Length: 582
Image 1 (tube, rainbow, N blue to C red):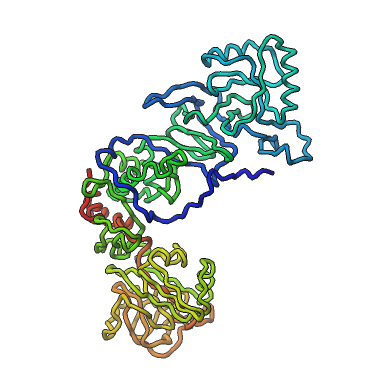
Image 2: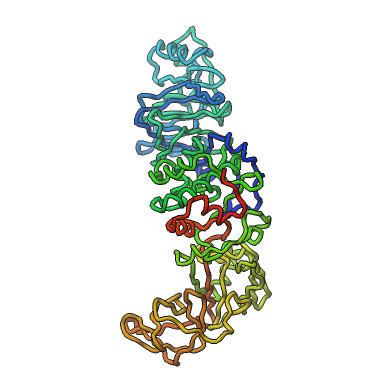
């Protein structure tokens, strides 16, 4: 079988934030952008066939400026399939691509190819072509209209030239006075067929961008609903590239709820809408080599189409319509992340370029929100395997040391020492190796065998502090265990037991606090096992803050600010230094 997922181009998207910042865009120019093209299917996700539905049928055409030129309609078809004009075979009431030159053994007569017979010459309009089509006598293969360098009528989906020659002869007997011509294959052609497999129309995507529009305004494509129109293109040696074109504001309806929960306060939603709009304007044409502006994944912004919309999102977008953030008259790259952990980061400490509007700021609003603090335990073996997968071979790990930190606390250089040498991971490379969901941020300390190593982000040299008795945590090999500290006991909910350590640490709201307990083990009476309060010599505990790169707006912080009554302008001005909203 042919591989249906042929590559549009040989490319791999790296799902990380931009390392090279896009060219600045004047604020004035940004407001002139109305339409945006979003890649829905392309590259490895391209497909030989696309299924589309509309409650009132479809119209087909192209744009000249802002005017849509309608050249074909499928008003009676609630469902159409757009597929490559290639070699296909009917299997279980559907069609699959099939290589008739190299594959044998199938006796299915429902096979179709990409060689056609043209009946007559070129016509001046669709009406002329359709009138000629209706005047033809019944032919075994139903003729159909084609738009390729003008209007034409073709017949046949022949799999070989010999089949085409046989069909040519049959039609010549039927229409002796009509000119006939065999049409060879072309890798730009696309078929439109109905749900029964009947060919309705052919067009060639090499000429211009052609759009499918739904009369009802909403197109359902492969089970997901979208506003706007669908451009379906075919590049050489590829499957179908599908592009959704729609207004910028309509696009944001489908972006904001994918980046922020729809039930969050409206001012937080507005903050996200302005940030997403600024990103959209600045990054338009990001994928221009492939025929669209942005893709629908985290490589650009996550876009869920009409299916993901909700009323609060629409309100946030509508009430900030056209609003973007600028710095020194240029649209900014509006970076955002989940939770800062209590302080955001300078741009050059994450990527390379210093940006005046991405400066680290105190963020008390993110504290107490999900993932403001976290732990992750790795064994030496796990870390060695992760390094090996990235082509780094240090042998047996002997130590892991945060060597350099930013002024905001995040690790810039992490040295991993081993029996075969050392490796230094820098900035984003650290989370790339350890895993973005496991190592939630670069703001962390490393603990082994109960001791913090390297440059510490908290002062543990002071005398032990008095610990409050409510909702504290003990750090174990399994992560943080929530407990109630009372005198020298830990209440596990079943019974109070003494713990086994002294001079160890409890994670409190103020950070790591050194405390002393009596030398008695904690034993879980239900599981009959001992919970180790700290890591062993073969384990490294990463104790961190925040989730994401830490640049720009903290989404959980924005939520908290909105709950406390701040406006979206105040939220954005807090996280983006020196910006204007216009």
